[in-house]
Image 1 (tube, rainbow, N blue to C red):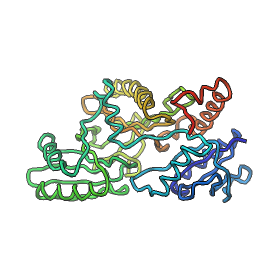
Image 2 (cartoon, one colour):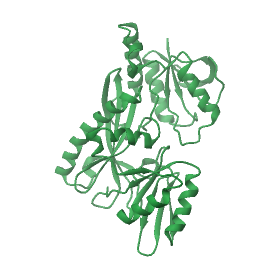
Image 3 (cartoon, helix red, strand yellow):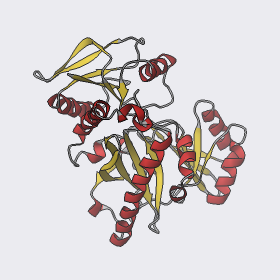
Image 4 (cartoon, rainbow, N blue to C red):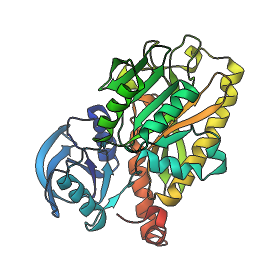
Length: 362
């Protein structure tokens, strides 16, 4: 029987998604395991095995699974031990990762800018350096009066900042673990002091702040989930509108945003329809373009904004999307196992699996 391991920082994460994966994988002939990276590099791991008959998890030692689905969400705080363990799995263990993931947001942004089509839909962004951030931030506030700072590594919108320069003060909103914190600075120098202290702990990108609001002044975006359904086929699995409240600047679900139907989105229908067509083309372009240099990839979460003129903006691409936004769409929990079967078929058939770098082993 084939074995399928789900790698997580915490076995408490994504309980609903993991439960659906386990049921689907068991029905398709896979033994399902869960384990964390805080262990030694060894061909026998410690974790949980799913009991298909009793519908529960049993702690057990087990060999490195045939396939590994990496669901570790990196926020820049991965320990050296965890990093070494994951690297060992990818380079030395006899296993296949469904995807290796993407580098930080800045590296992804620079890569996407090389594509002429995608470049037209990317917000102006700059990596903040400790010795140049004062000039960069000051110039951006002069030109735009409002900007976004986002961590280069991170997920769920944590650490995201919006800076607004008013005539007599500078307002800063910070998304901290799903809560919006408000700070006020009297001078640009005090703001820059705060930013420099933050940069000592993690890298940030400065990005132009776009007007991505519906007619009720609520922030919103369109989340598109792309997945590989075979070794060479990307498909859009689902698309949803995420809407924040009018007092927030983010639409992320972990920060109080909600999923709404297209009919609930307050935007002219013709503008929305044209934007949706553009998003479809861009999504497939992003997936194929990123995979050329960052293979192997298995899934992508793409966040698109639509401004008031109808222009589409690619806000972010991440390789470990959440699945709350697409739970109403098709049997998404079976896709990882069909993908595994595709890789097995290719390997046993024409040996294309080992030759094609876009799906290389490990």
